[in-house]
Image (cartoon, rainbow, N blue to C red):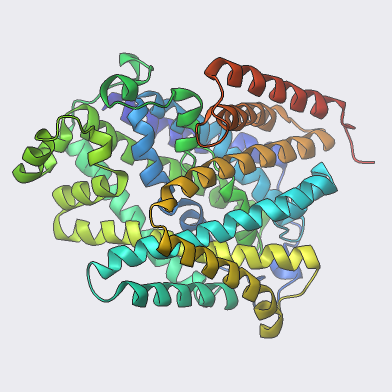
Amino acid sequence: MISFLISLVALVVGYMVYGRVVERVFGPDDRETPALRKADGIDYIVLPGWRIFMIQFLNIAGTGPIFGAIMGMWFGPAAYLWIVLGCIFGGAVHDYISGMLSLRNDGQGLAELTGHYLGPVARKFLIVFTMMMMVLVGAFFVYCPAIILSGIWGDRMMWVFIIFAYYIATTMMPIDKVIGRVYPLFAMSMLFMVVALGLVLAIKHLELPEVWDGLGNWGAERLGLKQTIFPALFVTIACGAVSGFHATQSPMMARCMKSERQGRPIFYGAMITEGIVALVWATISSYFFFSGGWREVCSPEVVAKFEGQTALSLIQFFDAPTVVNIICSSWLGTFGSILALLGIVAAPITTGGSSFRTARLILSEAFGLKQTSMHSRLLLSLPVFAVGIALLAWQIGNPSGFGTVWQYVAWGTQVMAAITLWMCSVYLRQEGKCYWMTLLPAMFMTMVVMDFFFVSPTILGLDYWLSLLLASVFTLVAVLRFAIRPKRKA
């Protein structure tokens, strides 16, 4: 528990201290924001600061800091360090500077910002890559919630149609009509769940593995985990530490802010809040898998069933959604089950809806089309919906394919994180500001994604040490390319 408490304090102090340092380096001022300058009643609308924070938090969170943290703690207490250090010095900086750059550039999306600072080739790559990621996330977050909801009431395909209809509404309607009203409610429920679980952790004062007990791969030793801690841990825990998906969502909120000075609480603060969510669930995962917690919270029948399957590892028997359900039901009772349902169902649905809306915005920027009329929004949304429906049909026919595809999505979001951090580094260097605060995370994330690309059996599957060598060479080339770029814009 000591590692958990120290980590919690570190995240709060990180926001108060390092967050202010990052803010001072960027230098927000009182210039007119896009929400005021380009108000269109659709995407550019001034919203209250607290509402923007809640939407931003839910947009970037979803189930990522829950499921990812549970699976990340399979590697052991090293997950604490990644959540805390990654969040304060990587993810929150990534979110703040990329969000503020969007705010400074008329609410531009990640692809357009990347083209502005890294060149037209990078822009074209990001348009295709982020479009692919957004549609994948949106499509694959339809069927899984539909399965869960059909187990409670109704037919599976009925829920598929209802969820997709909701996606259409969030994509087409003005941002204050659906997203602005619904998302804050779901965000509040997630925050309430995390606070309640944190209080239970504090009251129980559980005996848990600490960071100083060892930073090795506990999962390999105790759970039969075959992946190496580097780079797998840093891809598994994305939301809650560093995630490039956030840079695709922040422009939506940059178009709703009335002042640049809202940036630190909205962008940096939402990421720190997400880090706290990941921290709570990582600690619960540590208790569940390494301190025998599964025996204490599961029914005698479940314990007996598992013990009768001696060849089956814990992580195969208790996947992340199962752990969420068991813990919430056991610790929070009936109300906890409702909150778990919101976390498992509502969060991916809202994330999927935001992803489709982001895809529309990416296309509108790429083709320079205004979105003030319903006709123009429908024109760009139809191909997005068509591809989403095709992917959804494929998933319904191949339900086991979700796990395989999602590995590529998890890696893809970290690719976007690396690119975003390089973009931020170029901006800071051009402005004569301290670029090391994004350059060092950019180097680290480049090493992570390239090593994963080379070593992962789902991609190239090369030898571990050869993969490290190739990733190091690629990272060095990226650093040299950054060093020879002009220090200031021409």
